[in-house]
Image (cartoon, rainbow, N blue to C red):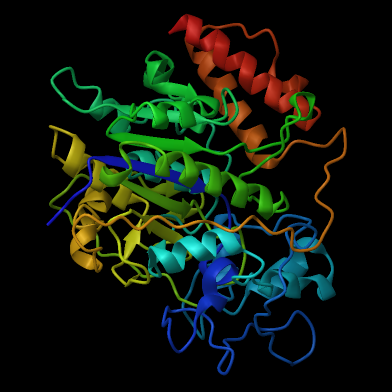
Length: 463
């Protein structure tokens, strides 16, 4: 059975499985998605008529303001109550929660809008022509930062909320494990914005920044056959208008088609690489972003044979259930088109797989990593191409599915970039580095991007 020597993970932002891929379901393609003849429903924001998903999502303008996805809001979306008590039907609170957040009862239905293979052609094509996983769940029923920390460390330092500015500081990540001097494998973290990674607020990685590279180098490294064993790609989280660059993370309400272009760019670069036949690309999303999905997240059984996961104290949470389902697509030229992988994964699966394949240290960080399924055996789960044949797909262009994607010249920063900046400020303070720009000086998206870039440069000199 073949395996892969190079793993590339592209983690995008804040979209649920049903929202992105649910309407791909058909009699010939039986993913656990949305059956037009038997659609799930959500409770309405007003009145008594249940709300069904609709195939009319647009690239922008549907989700402004940003749907809430903090722990308490996710409880409401899943369970219908802030406490997370499973007292009745689940996955019915999305519309009411967004109506409350947007302060507009008629806007609540927007979290039910979904894409189709016509309006999301790049991701849809890769899903159908390679392998889709329809049971990949976010690791935390909450926001971006704790979920991304789980993808790197199988825990979030006890934080279940977005404002986890101190959590990354001392976290031991899988990158630190790979840096063992005797370990034969290496990694690389490509960032679309210099400093645009929560990892750059980690004290260990601040002192070991040789693994960070600008995304602008990715295609050339692919062409040279110079990819390491493990590659993690960070999208652009906010607009950098001064340099003519726009956010491509797909975080609401940034343009979805910009993210589609990024996916296509990553895929195209890999296809041209001499390492393509031995590379697995995983496209996945960090969390659902408050957008509808119909599959209830599973609970997990704590295994005391492994180290504990630091619990969240406020809100109280033991990280013993998963977050909402997100899109996940496995791409390899060895995969025959069309398989549907039903094995349950979450972001800890990335940590567990990297450790299994590329680390001498095989001891899991904690029980969550130990419990996570790995995908090192991906080629035993899917039909393979005949020997000597590669599955090389030509992607359609991304599609601008309604809305006005042009960004204004001055815009407030996203919450995520503010929290990332606060985390980097905390790291600088811990190291005694006086940054030329303080986080309190951020007023616009451009300020936030400039802060991240400048702080990364100053912290690199400290490292």
